[in-house]
Image (cartoon, rainbow, N blue to C red; front, side, top):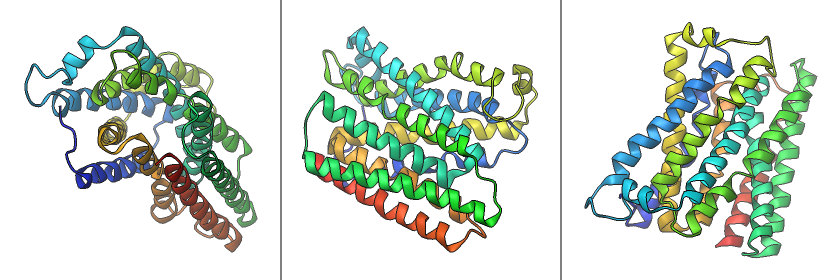
Length: 327
């Protein structure tokens, strides 16, 4: 099994992870005339396929008798840990599906920071409640900064109405629900990594994404029949969809999956706190894509841009405080 043997390699993997997590949604932004519910099937297949590919390559290097290699690790792991990881994947998948819906409604620069900012708050609070570790004062300060960042991003979005742009309260509600769910799946994965016969990083990625893919049969089928935006869609639309839409969906899944595996593998060297903190900078990457590449705030009033700048400042401060509290 490949794991980093130097701080530089681990850092490069974590930075790559943050870039991947903050960039995969560009593939959906690039889709034309293809509903997000249909795009999401390709995405879910993509994250599972890339996790398998990396597990059978990077996760299977070295001696075949290595107990940490992918297949040997799966054979020795407790069934409860495999199930726990798949449950975490199902919760993550619902959160991520709602995030894509929010991107469809509000754009990258709004959906990502609001949803993941709330996920950061929920994740920190739930983790501390389950295992009171770290500096409580710094954690509390980090949570407050993250909440301020979410409020600033919401105000930036609301300010777009002044410029005559459409603003959807529903999209903010979807972001909030997505963020709460996004902060709840991690404890299931943490259990599989710390209790009994544990799962390694490559095994975690495979079963997490398998749980996500299988749960699409429930979550995504529901949203196809009762969509948050637009009319219901059928599976016929998936099979008649554009080749570019399918390709971009798979590519988006591949990009996210690489980010997940790299973050988990890097954490085995640096520790979860540092890997998590750097990975959580992904919304800043996504917001930059939304502002600079997709021009989501073009023509917006100065007040909106000021709120957006404050969001960047407080979000980065929140990440630093959480990392410091755990480090």
